[in-house]
Image 1 (spheres, helix red, strand yellow):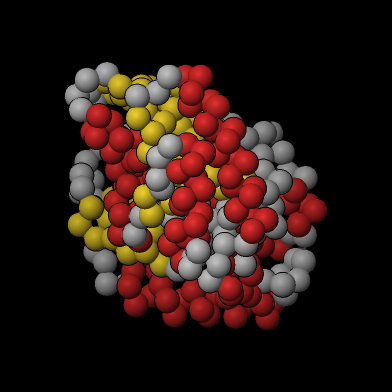
Image 2 (spheres, one colour):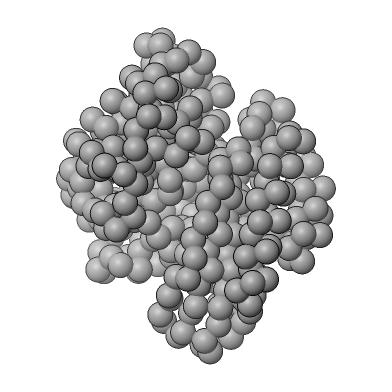
Length: 307
């Protein structure tokens, strides 16, 4: 594989992220990571349509990213869209407008493709072991298990934005709302996860999980170096989830590691993570938190296209 500079874009339900990286054979060197919270999936769970204002927020981020990509002279751009676009009946119109801005048409990943890209991005630093990767997004959550390569993957229509819009209406969520959400999560997760063999490693990726990790570690600010590869006892992770669920949004937003665009939906994500950890069979008592995720998997795939 020749040396190439790639730009990978992950367009999710809550955020759109950019990674510019140089890839030389089996080595990836990150040059730039950017994130914008655009809430593209606003209302999609109910309406099945991308809202015009959400589309405009996302396209403005695409224009910003386009200027960065041009300035950095990348060899290839790969744009992957996930749950919100996957569920929207106006996805084609959105993709057309992205292509006008960036010159590349979004690839709308299936749940299985999203899961596999997350696994590839997240497991690069994990010694060979039966590993389960949890990728918790705004619209969907992927759980992937494998030894070096995925042998099982499942995409659940469970995400922080989706659960918030569907179940969590008060601030903070009421006991009844939390109970209803948990009952739904258990009904969806238990039949699928309960049949898996126990994992030797569990890896959590994406912004909801890394923020919960920062909360569990009581960091004075968001610190990627402290978060990446942190090993946190599952009981401590679940305690952090419970604490965030009980906080008013204003208190969450005041946390020094909380992105303001995540504060109003992280309770939904915390509920999902808590229930996944409840139902996922494991030999380990730790959650490994990774800053490398689907975005890194998209970058690796883009480099293979250039080679």
